[in-house]
Image (cartoon, rainbow, N blue to C red):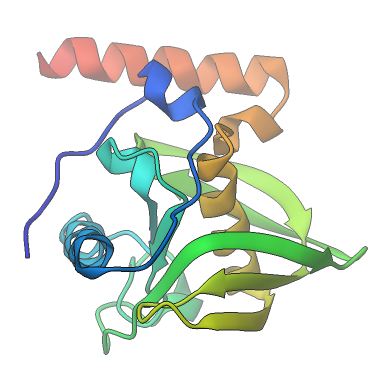
Length: 179
């Protein structure tokens, strides 16, 4: 396994739509493993392939191990990664949730985002088997955030223009300061 380099905003790759995966093979499983290792290394709870420069419809999540930011994520607990290939939202609730979201491609930046409280996802798992899962609360928010990445959408796209520009300016200043 390997820790992969992350893509950061404003890289135009983050605005591109990812391509479906034809089959889950050893190459895809290696990418999934590397993505989990990268996500854990950066203390994230989710990561889309585009965030490591790969335009494929692949994401990983691990709420059990993940970020200390979310009490529901359980801090530095047991690793229980979820691997999703070609994930698709097939149903969502009218009821909404608000979470303060962050993103590994927007380090140190956070904002409240409103999303459906529950979603149903169909996807291929690590072995290429078709799965269907109902997600709620934090898992729902996380999977929607990552699927957005696969569609060229980032969490700041859900914000008002003023909030979005404020985050982008902070990020630009942060990167200039660190160079």
